[in-house]
Amino acid sequence: KKRMTVVVPLHNEDRIVFGDLLESIYNQTRLPQRIHVVDNGSTEENSLACRMSYLAWVEPLRYKGVECYYEVTGKIGKRASQVIAFDADPYAELFVTLDSDTVLDPSALAEGSYPFMDPRVTSVAGLLLTLNQGKNLLTRLTDLTFTTSFLNGRSSWSRLGSVVVNCGGLAFYRGDVVRKYRNRYLNQTVFGKHVQSGDDRMLTSFALLEG
Image (cartoon, rainbow, N blue to C red; front, side, top):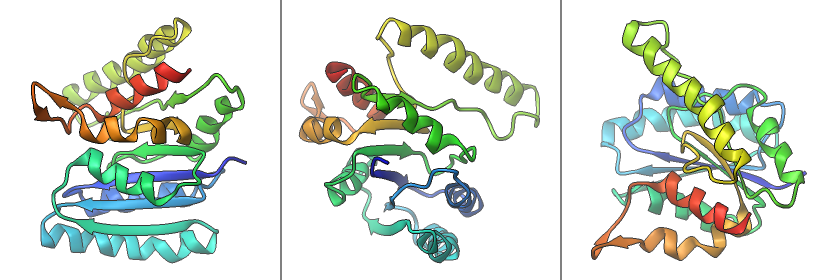
């Protein structure tokens, strides 16, 4: 079983949703070896609330053998937050990037790790659905857009080896690919300006360069 590290940047997240994320990791059929949360500049009140959600789940996760880490930084941006977690586990064979409002299906980590048995695979995209799809017409239309984007768009692109972006809400990457391009990922500039957005697009591009 490949060593898997789950990376969760956190910024002013709803504590209940964040707690649901942690619970969904606890309920996985295939547990990660490590989870690393980096609180990137949340307000003091929000940071404390999310910390309490984390403390409610840290011991149950550790009891199951998951290494758990939670860091609080200043506002350094999403990419820099992820790199802190990437650097902290030099032995990870798979990195899983999650947004802090993602709630995983129980088989998500197991299903996402299977394709890596093929050495040509360097990244796997998760299928994202909305949590509030039944709330109103707008959320129903948004959910439909998500579903078709993944099941039709990314699936067809994948057959051509040309997926544009694995959405950051749930994506898997080989550890050696992330490490190879770590400095370019962290220090990208466009017209002399440092870039922090487009994290999932850049990681997908690096994965495409390698497989």
